[in-house]
Picture (cartoon, one colour):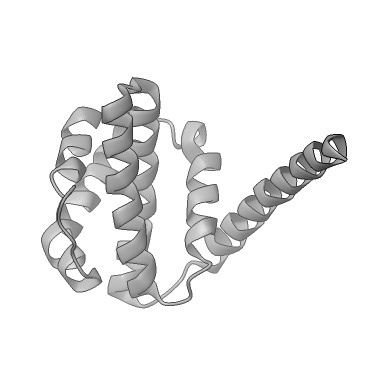
Length: 144
């Protein structure tokens, strides 16, 4: 199933779709794949990655921009994984981006944000950024 959705995303490699086109052309398919993933996979296994990527998307306040850029990132990540023949990363990115895009599509359609998920996502992304900053400060300390 992951190869089916990764191939679906990969088909958009050299195309640029605006948010309304993504919603109209891809929305139903992405939501169907999300449903299949939820039926067959343990969400807890992917929750952290889901929250980090969703938190990253909240840097943009406009849902149309979040949908557009996240879709482009998904296509790029999947293309890179295919080029590198990294099957583990391909599976992870396919699942996580499908879940994130489904969340954004639901928000795009309803114009309502699930504030609990938003706060969890922002917090998880913030933790990641703090860890990166801490690692970077160690690296710079050794350069001096």
